[in-house]
Length: 489
Image 1 (cartoon, rainbow, N blue to C red):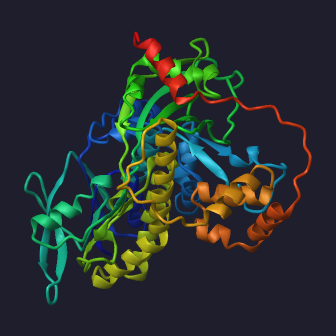
Image 2 (cartoon, rainbow, N blue to C red):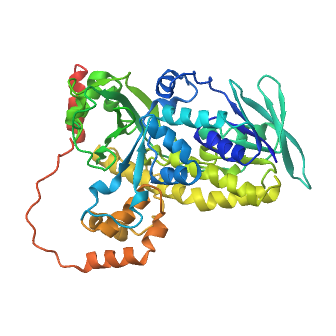
Image 3 (cartoon, helix red, strand yellow):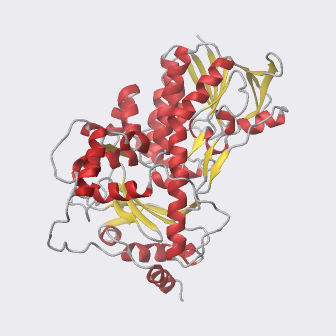
């Protein structure tokens, strides 16, 4: 049995506490947020005040990797979320060709508001006898002692109130701020540099509730688990959530001054009305807003040096979830990677029970295997999106922002996206990448996938009747005009 302190009570911290507590470890979670109120889950989640977790008030999804992780490691948490109104959406509903294939049970998304899932996790953790959650508690520093020549070992933490909390293992689950960097720097321990790649993304979103929960959906979910799209100069995507709630989120370039006005309800609604697949959902007779329009700047892609092998590990100190790796939020991988990383760290502790330097190196290997591919993918996809959006908006691409090397050749990637529209095997491969079930390297190395790509490339173009055009997204000028009309010019 090991005594473990986890700094941070978000998805990664709670999932790790759940995994470790069930294995008999003594765990204390130190969370700087307020404790959630008691009462029914959905109502308590809506009343939970978390100003220090601003992203919790925005749209989230749990993609296929996250669902598979809960099914394997915490099925009771998944069941509890479903009992509270979350839903599993079958992505194969939009697969070409129809029918079911082996492995399709994995191709689902859990649609749920972030506070609801957090509260379900929180209550599962709180029910464990060996786990304590301390709210309004912040780690001010590490307790360190020498460990061999020039090495260090973490032996606990000191809280902001001066409380000393000894531990065999300290886990930084503080999210994207990755507080262990500042703990180490304050103690004079060298901190290796991070790898970063900008996302250059501003998100503007609002939640709604359908007025008639028993009526038909206002419009199709053309993306399987969402409506809308990522267009040539912005994104406008609707995600269903729990209990007849849905969220609409616009993604725009932070420097686009006109789209800054999306923060006003009138401009937000006007942009919904000109964006494909969204207009019917914001009809006031169909849905009512649940709160204000909220704006948040999205973080860059980050691979933390403290979580990798670029520096000597500090024995007894690990990073989990976003404290180890942050990926562009547009791609919806954050919660799922946090869950997968947390349960994998718990497995690692079973294999490496001593919180020594060997555990640190094994944890760095896990980051390289599990998180590094999605960091690299995020950097590439973020750069490509920014370049496309800036070109459509007439803004030159920053010459200092070097283009990252593609993970798969541009020719193959383009061929795959084209073939996915009609070929079910290619569609499933691309969908597995998009939902984090398989990395691009794994999917493109699959022989069946390769064969279908070659067949699609070699097939002569068949004469087809012109398909009816889908909804056309507004040009940048048209979107700006719709927004400006609500702003008096």
